Amino acid sequence: MHLEDMKKEIESLVLEKGFYNKREDIPKKLLFAFIELGEASDAWKKGAAEEKIAEEIIDVIFYLLDASRLACPSVNMDETFKKKLSKNRSRPYQYGEGHRNK
Ligand SMILES: [Mg+2]
Image 1 (tube, rainbow, N blue to C red):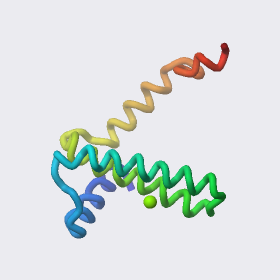
Image 2: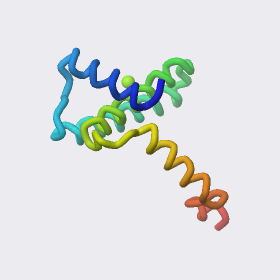
Image 3: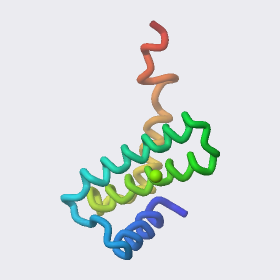
Image 4: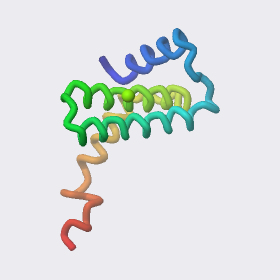
């Protein structure tokens, strides 16, 4: 499943469950993504099963894609992923981690 397909599935779930669905809700959705990141980190720290950690990481992805659906609806996230991956690949080894050599 591609990111754009996932966005459509998430939108369907949001509508079905009556979750927040307005542009003004974007900050909430991004905050929820942070909360899910914390849950993923906590699960890892507590030695949870890989499936539990994976589920929390998927929760993060859900909220991020849901926020993207409202924040930048005309942007194709599959294309954006490909462009960003290419951009990052063109950067030097350990870019942005210059502190490692100090
Ligand atoms: Mg969760």
